[in-house]
Image (cartoon, rainbow, N blue to C red):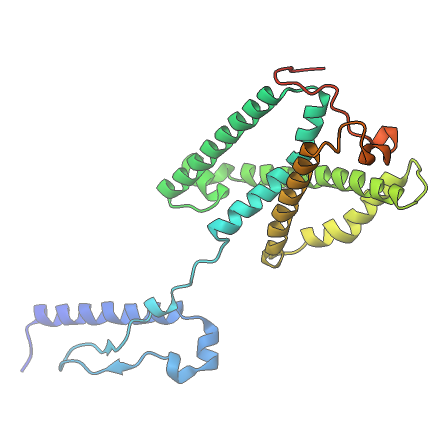
Length: 269
């Protein structure tokens, strides 16, 4: 007996849809799974009702969904604190030594922190609304993908500027340590230190494609910052920075700390 043509066409359409689903699921599976275990990775087909297309005994796409990869919220917070406080602690100290009072300094830090926090919130909210997870994707979803190269250029410029700034900081710190260790002071010492650290340390680290192995250094940096702040606070409270004291007597006059410009509200020297 021949079935009606309309019923046959419906069954053929269902069979084609199921076959297409199986093909898409097979393409979604990683190639390594077929090479490692051909029998276990291949979908097992079960015979359905007579005249119907074969059905799979288990879902394929759900088993091959990749897990999200990225930094955790805790590690991201630690890295941001380390980046901001690591270099900012030096500039804040220099600003206070130049004559900025306690009240203006604290107010400026709080205001800039609030602005930065609100900016981070806006970026996260925009990514959630557009379904993106990076600056380039967010730019493409809001302003168009044709000009998304501007984001890559800004990020590259920011990384280059940060590398130059940190090279200068490392050059100042290590050249001072070398002079304290007895290395003769000369005009080329700082330049030699910067060139050596850039070639031997910064350049190889910048060429790494995956920096997850260095995540522990952010935690170490935060611990070092807290230790430095606690040490300075203890010295300030026990009177070691005020004359007369054994600490100040052991230092050369040009290396002794000065609090002559310290105040509550002064904005300049």
